[in-house]
Length: 440
Image (cartoon, rainbow, N blue to C red; front, side, top):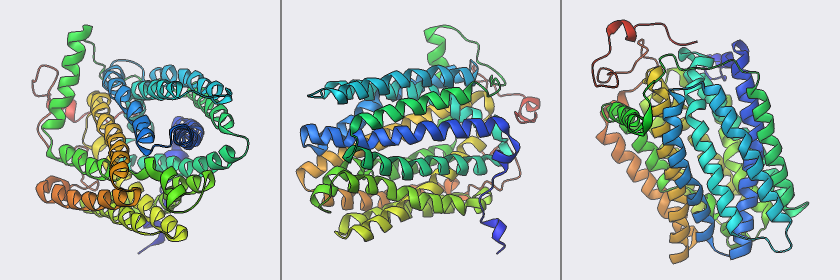
């Protein structure tokens, strides 16, 4: 098969200046954020000695995130998406500074970590749907898989570099250095957004008031509920995330299973990113892939993490985590592309917000659940159990949703099969609206 079929498609970066700016800003902010994730996990474990507390910090971020994304989805379909991203990234600089100040205290407190984590979730949620909804306009609907792979690869590059640097900094200069770099990363992202062109929705939602806002969210829910493919995408993502999120256990595993400290924690966080970068570099084929590849990628994730939980050899554990990261990159690329491919622009903010609710709550529940299971049994037992449940759940979702198995990004039409679109009153949209040019 020709090499070009596998090489990463760089056309969104090559052809769109605004996508390049968003890509660069997102990468800069994420490196600092993922350094902070290692620092927060280690600090909480150091203060409490509890894996459950590390998991609860993830949950503390997820609950405000749910509120944020539901509100942010409505806002993204009403207002300029660039301004929404900018207005929600600048405050995160102050949140990171607050974490830095707490870390510099002679006796750091636990409660500021929970408060800062909750605020991070809230602001990330408010701006997240705007970013997801903006990608098709910046990259073009025909390049959604390529844009998804590039975004995911930037996230995984940050996940490779950020946690490794975080572990080194925690063991060296200290926690405050991680939080200071996180603050700088959000400033970089905000600066990049200043030069991105305005991104108003193509058909902005104009209803006012709280009741109308809830009605707008309900429209998005009805659209999702009416599409078996989107329901299948949500469920297979939940199968991967709810039962198989071992990040909360990395400090415990580094200490108890691999006899290491912060440096080993950083390696465990970074290993999946290395595999994901390999997946991103060979992701050219995903532009014409679909449901079967997605199912296989999620199975690779679950099986690899099952093996990770069974081994006590650090090199083998890192290889298995890298394989898990490869599977996660492919599944994330395909889930995102299939979702955006099947959603009209005027609903992308709200549908993206519902997607983010599921995609954010599931990992938080997974981290918290595995943390509590590890308290009752052991960290190893929790990881192995989660991996096996993921595999079984994925197979069940694949069997129950034929639309997921049949889905393909190679479909010639801009919309995947599903019920007819409706306006906010439930009236079928006109054919002329459906056949209009895609946003640019």
